[in-house]
Image 1 (cartoon, rainbow, N blue to C red):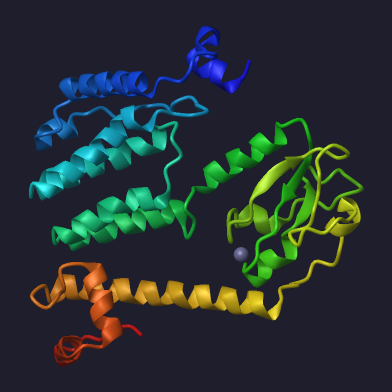
Image 2 (image 1 turned 180 degrees about the vertical axis):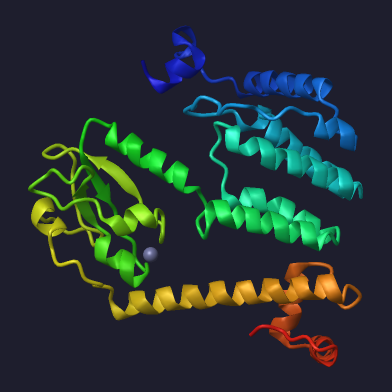
Length: 311
Ligand SMILES: [Zn+2]
């Protein structure tokens, strides 16, 4: 059965997809959820039940009708109306429910709560939530558990082989492993075993993986070259990035470090010098990049108080 048939039933597949009808059906479900759960009081939000088991996987989950997503939308609504406590409560509940959802949420989806807590001046809670998320995700956007599942889906695709695609401007380590076919079981004597580095650092530089069917799947190198996939996959495992690629990677790392320092400095301002802090992070960055007199005066006030800005 095809994907559309699974989703809409065999009868309806040939009919044109009626987006209005789909939206109306979703809205009905959203209204129903909102009528069952009270999302307008702290106790009401806290009373919304958290699932005890993971939702079964769906090919195309209707995100908009998920309780956690409705809570996220509600959080935006509360925040806009100045009801920050309710907004935060919605996101807390959403963070509790998300791990059980069939939707694969990313670390940044969970970190919205951290940002709301900071905006409300609840810095201790923000730190605790960030630490909790760091312990689950590390530096990655998906959990190790999710990554392992994705790999086992590849392993269940009827082939032991996986194509790890190429990526320009990745790190020195990923460069050694990109653009090759691997044997997930390690049993192939034609292709190298799936590298331990990729097991432990899933998604490190965003290398994408596809099942590979030897003799059927096409293989072209990331430079669009026509090669023998087995010979090419066994080429020396070295960092073969060009100078341009290294420069691109170093620049992206520099930007990441700069962004992290900016965020830290802005948080320091918001927490300890709220009167000096610009209203938004974007405002802070603009001020800093322009090195405006106002920014210089903030830096010296922070210094006088015995704190320092990270470079
Ligand atoms: Zn990497």
